[in-house]
Length: 189
Image 1 (cartoon, rainbow, N blue to C red):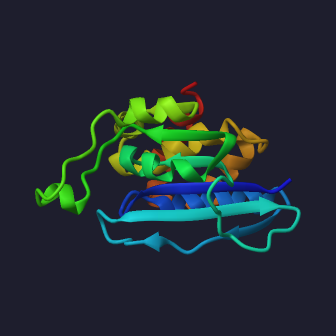
Image 2: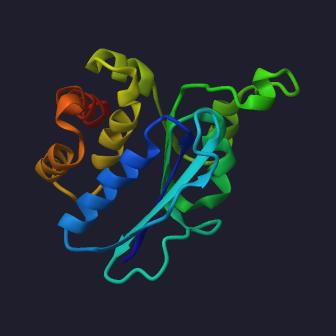
């Protein structure tokens, strides 16, 4: 029973911390864990994809099309781009935030319209205003932990395990905000 989770977003959104938290929870549950390096341009604004796989024995962190049990999407367009990787019956959790990619910023392309509707047509998705929740927690950079909170509710790991790992993984000066962000996400649905 291996699980494959794909985390997609743009550089600077905290996808690496999210994958570290997820990986650490899986390790603490006794699973073999593989986490990929970042694929894409990790500088602010470029697409970032991280894979986390865990289970009895995991040989590769790479997730192919149609294999992701969960996609955790930090941005709308990145969610749409990742859809082919979601397995039939998989779950996608999407932050409703829009961050324009460079071709849109410089005017070469337009940000696609109606992305939420296009995603809803293809899969059963959970949409979250994680930016608003992160602001409520005290820091817009906590979007990642809000989304981890939403996802955590859909895993077998106990709430207390997630809190324990957050305390071990998040730097002390950001811990209070991130614990609030996690709780806001965890209790959102």
